[in-house]
Length: 104
Image (tube, rainbow, N blue to C red; front, top):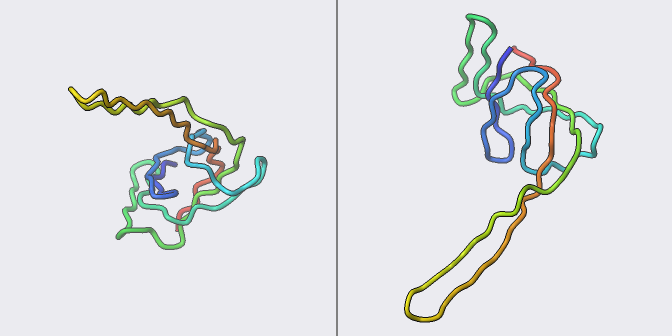
């Protein structure tokens, strides 16, 4: 079974058993949580598309761990003015495993 769901303003596509990096969630590692904003579910040849969400559908996921992503460098430059700024940023993430996709 395959699902497209929305989490923290981003859309993710996953099968059961997939491991994803998502924006950091306020759930402790080892605990499970439900994602109720499911947009599309595909089961073999049958597809269900929400308008915009599918009612009574959810994705059960387990948080594996939390971490910080690779550093992204932001460089600002303006010519002929000696203006240069460098700044780094590391985004927090949660690694989740999709355990079960529940269709209505």
